[in-house]
Image 1 (cartoon, rainbow, N blue to C red):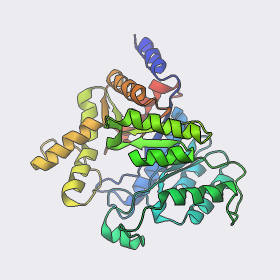
Image 2 (cartoon, rainbow, N blue to C red):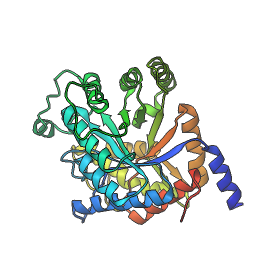
Image 3 (tube, helix red, strand yellow):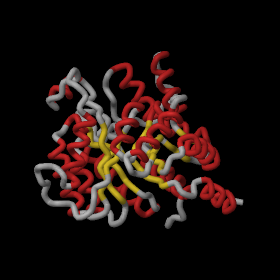
Image 4 (cartoon, helix red, strand yellow):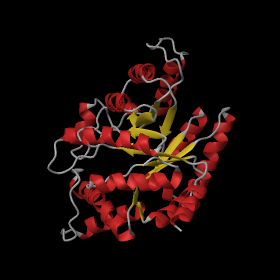
Length: 338
């Protein structure tokens, strides 16, 4: 029976790639460096499990996240792995000069040929002091589309200035998008990555149809990556408990302005009505449960979006439980070595 169920799950996702986004979440009682070491360890395990890509994030001066420099962390991950694609989910383009980003990723591609991805987004710093430190003005005009075009010109060699080293292979560029970003990605003929509340928007189907039409009009093939928190455990209750540390951190961020390190589950923790509401909403947005429950939920998400790839962005306090969840999820998509 267990073999039959595994075959059924694999049949549900025959063409869908499976990847991981790790945000280097810090944990209470540990130094930030431990989060970075765990990111590298998780990447090595993801490669063993057959994941397609492993991406890292950019967050500045956030207590709960140790990853502030994707290119540096990508280099560390790529050096400790052999085959898995490694990239950014993403580099926040408003925080950087496109030329510098192109140089960084051209160098990564030269060092690890055929394995580097460049995901770009348009979010600014988390708080006003961080935005000031990044020399960003939240009232400045949105130049993301122009910056994206400039970045691509440096990477493909069509810009007036030549980036060195010249990439022997093209560096794939992905756009981390909201509803407006879908149009930008489509007009640029680029793959798009969608996550968060936008996936629950009733108009997501129309938005994706428009994106696909724009990509084809640009002479390219559409490629849709959906990003979701996914936790797999022995039961729905056990998986829900794994989702709580991240949900608590989000509730703290919404009510105090500080996104904290992950903490162990404490079912008796006192929460305000506002915090309870945020926790419940966050847990509900997480795909969690036993393998059959998760498979059914993911099948619905992938059918609704027509996605080509699932990018899992899950965190929890218990690293061994996270490792087990990663392995269970991989078995739904791939024949893996354990």
